[in-house]
Amino acid sequence: MTAQKLVFNTLSPLVQFIQKSTFSSFLLFFSALLALILANSPANESIQWLLSQRIGFTIGDFSVYKSLLLWINDGLMSIFFFVVGLELKREIIAGELSNPKNVLLPIVAAIGGMVFPALIYVAMNSGGNPASMSGWGIPMATDIAFALGVLYLLGPKVPIQLKVFLTALAIIDDLGAVLIVALFYTSEISLVNLSYGASLFVLMIVLNLLGVRNVLLYAVLGIGGVWLATLLSGVHATVAAVLVASIIPADRRVDKARYLDAISDLTEKFKIANKAKNDKYLLSPDEENIIGEIKRLSKASISPLQRLERSMHGLVVFVVMPIFALANAGVVIESDWLEMISSQVALGVGLGLVVGKLTGIFGLSMLGIKLGWFKKPKGINTLMMLGISLLAAIGFTMSLFINSLAFDDPTMIGQAKMGILMASLVSGFAGYLILKKAIKGSTKA
Image (cartoon, rainbow, N blue to C red; front, side, top):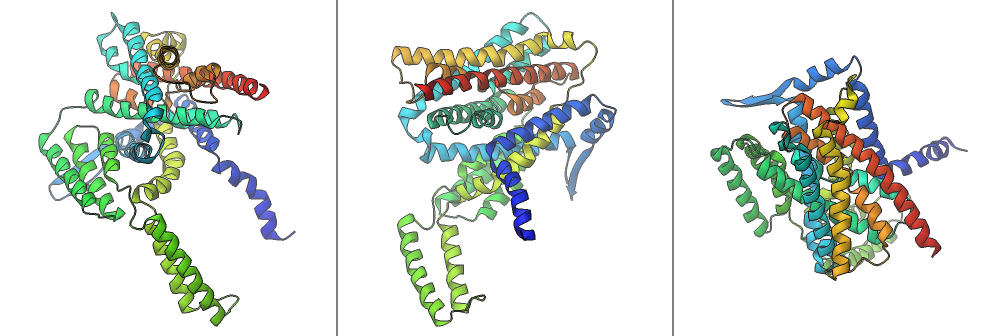
């Protein structure tokens, strides 16, 4: 066996594992576990010092300095929300959300999955510390990466309709989370900076309408203009990320028919050029030019939206989300941890996620199906709907993010984190077991 084959045979299983959707969930889970371990180790003091360090830049009279934690939550998470925005636009234009028949059920389920958790949290915290009431938005979110990761653990027998339903539900849920952040978790607004951002956003719309497809130009205007202006305005910068994503062009310079004709023509030219100089190793100048033209056409046949979504997906799941989890998932477990778990905040978040999501998603979905508002997706049974509703109770990333905006009190932040972690573990395991049983039963039938 050659050294090359030995390396390939050794690394191939690892590469295949990394490429699976389950790996991103594993990485996120590992990051959260590591954050929890580090938070309860002697390293915690150093980590908190590092996260509190102010980082920024000065250009003339203009300067921006924020703590490392805020750069992670405002900066890195903006990348996450940008990709969410791209996915949402794709789904609305040509995905599952483009068909009205496929939209009503996940919309009703998503609304129920946001309203009921918030109501449960408010009920659990009413009459207590008034400061705790700002956490009502924490249990409203679903972590699509974790939920889909658990679903993919069940293997290829999972009905595609189930994956589509969960994805559509989570995307609508993410949109709801963005609106909640924009409307209820925004600090004092600077109208001057907001007007700068709005002006640049309008400019991006005009460029889109004029047919400009230069991704770099949109990046400069979006990041250097709209995002930064929004950050300085007081409106959370992640909102700007979703708005910028909505402006990224979704059409192509070269349509499919033109691309197929051009590729066919270039292929024939390549064959002729190859016959003229049949070199086993080197390409002729004509062959190089033809391949270059194929590359140019191939790039122009993919919309900027799809190119960005594909290229940034790895950055989000392998870098952004693990770093966010490391910085935010750590909670110091004191000797009074039982009191911490039983606090109004932790119970409000935990029960809001598990009971609220289950009631809102499963309850309203079944009610709507019974009343004839919509039909149950083909290939999905009631037990599967129950299991998927529990998977949607995995709040993690989004819940931790809203937690960082909702509270200033470290005690309440820790209590909410505990509720998020406990609810995500319980709902994740319960959802997995129920879906495993449901899928096994459906395959036997």
